[in-house]
Image (cartoon, helix red, strand yellow):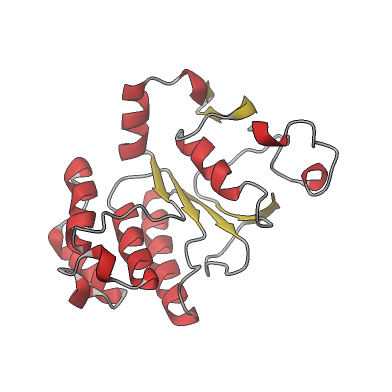
Length: 212
């Protein structure tokens, strides 16, 4: 991966870009490892996740997945990757406010057929929001919405999980519960976790920290 957001073109030799360990660097992210991408506000952490997920293409350079330039992937290729190989928890959460917490999760799970109803309820119980399962997402606190989005993100097979500021609205106790749940799922799949952080860090056993 050797990329740079186009908005930063011409700024390659300015701070903080010139000291970035990600932008314009030869970075390889491997299954089974946990990565923390540390970033100052405005340096492109959400953009990085969007590029890897294929949601945006406004960058220079190349991003390869299994040796293939992702800019060459078809819509069908991306649909397959996003349901079988790459899970994503965006910072904006992207819940449907008019749907209940459970309905938001079930939309994803119906596409993948990955988790049982029992697993979903157990995850909600562990995150202490099972009693909110039938509450519209717009009536949940931001922290509760974040936990719903985490359960939804885990309702698929994955080789890589992208999580953008996953615990920004959680206290230390819920951070630990979320980290345990993500760690358990990732280890069971031999998957990589790529987390971004400005301040609050998810409590995972990070193998490598990269400065954006």
